[in-house]
Length: 180
Image (cartoon, rainbow, N blue to C red):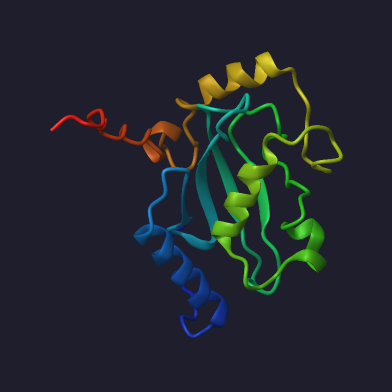
């Protein structure tokens, strides 16, 4: 594997990417985790939690977000790597905030926006909800894949989805009202 690429740290896109990486590290979420690869800051890997109340609940899904050299002025490409029953694997997904829709991308959006947007597209039905890269499989298969997704290991990161995004600790229970 090649070593890290040298970047012009004065480039506004590189500055933006580094700032987003710092922000995501400092502001940990229980819904997703994301970071650029050491060898290429334009290539991000993220793990997202399947949306609650859907057939994806309990699942953990690993995605790749590729930022263009013109980022943040051009939209990223997003590909799902974990079998999921909603998106084709390793294929660029056509949704409103990806490189398929450059005219809709806003430079104020970022990697976090793309991750949250991707998560919101999981439960939408039909190919109209997601053009290229969207698939429909039966609910029971999506639930089966959600269960299997937790132990899926990224061939690049060498980390399971569960290692990347463990379940949040349960909130401590409150004593019933009126108890001292």
